[in-house]
Length: 426
Image (cartoon, rainbow, N blue to C red):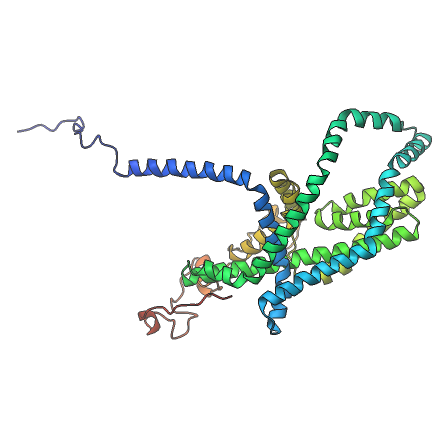
């Protein structure tokens, strides 16, 4: 009679062998690391190309509504794209012809007059508040010592920068044309690689992103133009010098820098006006604050009625993050990218009813938002919102055939046959 041993059984040579999947996993890991390093190095070399593609993509999204409108009026897509691009270029040329000479002249005068403005500001601060700033000669000497070499190399590189600018501009125009003109074929090529229900999801995301980004960019451009125009008129009335470049700076910065853009855009006009007189500076400051309220209450709701509203804190953090990673271009494109991400996530992320807690109230006794019957609904496989998802979110089971037509209900004739092929939408 054998006595059972308390020791574990001795391992055989077969048991000591590594799993069969381990060599394949190691090879795949090495290949993945190699591809990641190769991709990272390629991205560093292709930085200019990626910049051109990103800029072209956002411009194509902004052009899409106008092109679509022309296509609906029986124009071919290539011709419609060309007309929109030519119209945009003509509009820019007209604006430059009307105001370009004045803008450049005032900008040159402003740069040449910076030492005098600084001297006047220094004298005024010393007389009024007893604040002593370094003299003009001392500041210029310090700048020459610290930045002289960089300025010299920068001047030598101006010619190359001009040539590079025209090259990038030509490449952007060409890529934008092909992106817009061949947009339906490009989307069809992507959708042919996916199942029908995945095609609907991709097209839905594309449509949401396109609408939100186009509305966002176009509304910001309109608001920037309005801000520039009103600021230019006011600065001209109060006789502030260099009104056009100051107004353009205020309009662009106030619209494309979130949260603090209005205040950053108003610093330069107020500083130049302060060199004229303190009373003029106070008037400019009051105008900037008053116009901001008019824009928020009147202009913005009408111009950006369909655009995506971004949380100020999140938009500011997006600008900082994209600027730190991708530089000036990333900071400029941070808001459209954040708008796209929020639009897509708002479409597909399931939202639930809030619980009753004081941590969710901005003020004591505040009433939380009422229960929204659509809040817990998420898109189904076809990209639509269905009641079955809402029931599942609340932990209840619903009829599998509820909400379906007789042809789509379980057990129907259609469910027993081959699914029909769905052509991708252009």
